[in-house]
Image 1 (spheres, rainbow, N blue to C red):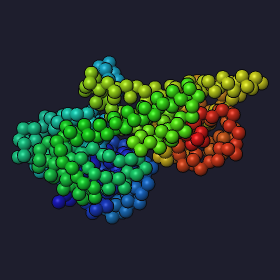
Image 2: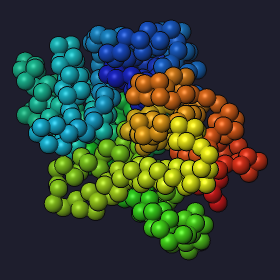
Image 3: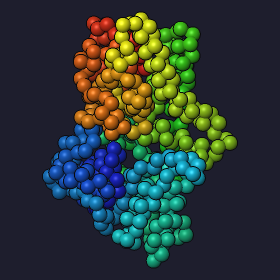
Image 4: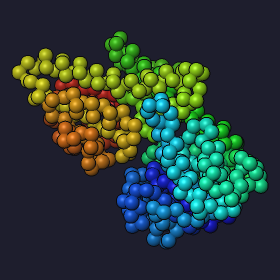
Length: 424
């Protein structure tokens, strides 16, 4: 039975995980470098948008089971839920494990015999073993699974999250978990920990397979989305309504084509396949191609915008380009959340802010302030005002507010509907 847990990283996964453990009357210390986030959590509030999470955090903090800090303290189990971005630098394209390494440096001084360390961060194959090596170098007085096996002082495992933003709390509880321990004992102890709140099955494997399982899930989805995105570009060229086409094709009992969009975003699907490509570049040909298709889709949307702008100016010769108002609907990487990470909608709107000399209206109901890259080139406004004023509308995210809006009541001179809400 684990009585004290420390969660390193209080973002979109770490905070819900910490809150759920705390809701089961386990003492949880959440650790984050963001002092503002720490202060917010200790007030019983949350710094992210996620349904149901605010009430759980408030109750856990009020009852004394959840506390946040910028400093790591001793605990029986440590869960690492920090970012693992994919970066390009002078050494080439590769996963950035620096946040995991810093987490190892933070927890190493307080490790004690019998502790369990779990890496939850989505990671390239071998990252859990690298974590174990860093801890071994920092604490030579302790033994670790790579050398001592089942008799190690410290148990280490990998357990990737498998949740959907907007449904994180429910899916953390109900989804199955893949547990990849460095030894059988590491896996067994990890299962005991997660069964504190997880109602789904906990399936045991080794650390490398657990790492690859998460990457495979997201690479598979990325390939499927790439097919839909490529199909949308083909249909535009052939003057075919892609939304109608997909609906017809999906009437086949063994066909399930996904819906196209402006690209792929978020911290998982837009990043994880690159971890596979970076390790096996010669073999991961399809995965690599799918990534490029999805990464290029925002550029295609920008080209569509340029075309619509040119058409509008030809049809309205009395207007200059500075007098053309453009509205971008949505900045988040998916519907009904505030998460802008790797968002194709954000990159498209940012590019239009640089390209377009006229007024730029941005509708994103889940944020209060525009990101810095707009540098006063965009105006955050409500949907009704944008739809009335805009000459060109780019629908980039299928937020519920947009789905409820009856676009037929308003004359939109030029519409680029990347989500098929108003084009079907």
